[in-house]
Length: 331
Image (cartoon, rainbow, N blue to C red):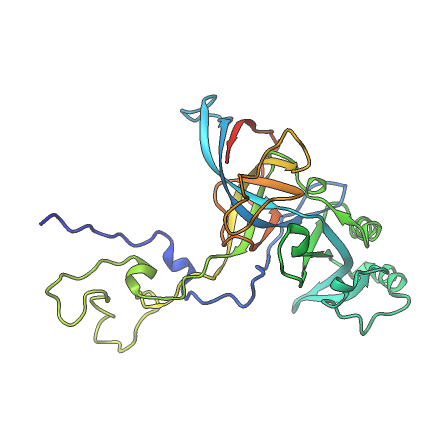
């Protein structure tokens, strides 16, 4: 008999303990970067995961052995339909936290989007009252909506979420969003090719799993008492409690996760004849990509057709954005 393969614990596994199911299919973004600029801009967009491709490019990283040579890497295709700016929200801040002071919505909101927002307390002079109360406002958020139908999916219910507006003072930020009320903005109005973003999504669900698959612990020997696929010990006799660090069976997958520093390798539109992104018959479990799309370097959490939120990079932001040198995309 050959030697039994040893399993090492997953790196960083305790960072997410306990692991529970996400409450919603839509991930939340709780932290935002600060932009040192006088021009305000919205810091988030979104897309839907379509499939994976291979990207052949020239490695433009400095001080690496592969610099200047060909690099084959995984790429994730996201369909990024235009998002609609439904409204603007202002937050004040005190020692108790943030407080929403006002909501100003666009006048002509499509019926499919109007169902998802509460317009019961809509005031006639909401815009004027908001401008008067800007002195105590600390942060301005844009209320964004996207329809899965625009990405070619069957889901009717749109996603509505907030995106921080950064750059300049509060007055400039409010004016910037006010001019965009009721308008659609595309992905190339927020990000550019070569920029690095953070992605937030709900991971692929695997249901209830045991300790071997969930925590990657080692199997016991085949002559062990009663069980083989369980943990050998739950802890000492005293104290009589099981610590949270002990691997246990439970929910695996369908967790909210944020992955950092995903580079935008390609940004384009399927109407452009020079860019061919669709395989014959479309992507498995998704279909044909139509309209605006981007290709991110590396993997993205979640299964196909799932909403992926894109946020401006919050860690290790470079001083200059370099466009990647793409040689080929293998579909």
